[in-house]
Image (cartoon, rainbow, N blue to C red; front, side):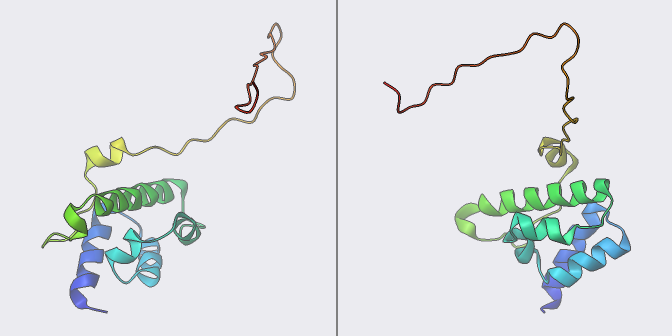
Length: 124
């Protein structure tokens, strides 16, 4: 691995604030930032198995921002400095993970059932 690429990855990881074991897992899975730019969502999710939810969400949002910037570079050429870690504003603009509350088996008292008509595009 090229030392400059490792330094670039280390600098990017510094901007995220992961724990030492989490950083080690990322460094083991990715040699360069370009590896993360091209990583599939399933690979990122697998890498984060066992991490605290806050760390996992922070890392996934940072990778999303990295991939977004990589896809919008002029002509796909990287800048001379390479990608930077996401800024606070960029992190805030990324979608947050949400967890839906479990649906109750019985509706609340006085609730009116909602009926929605769905039209199939094939219907005349």
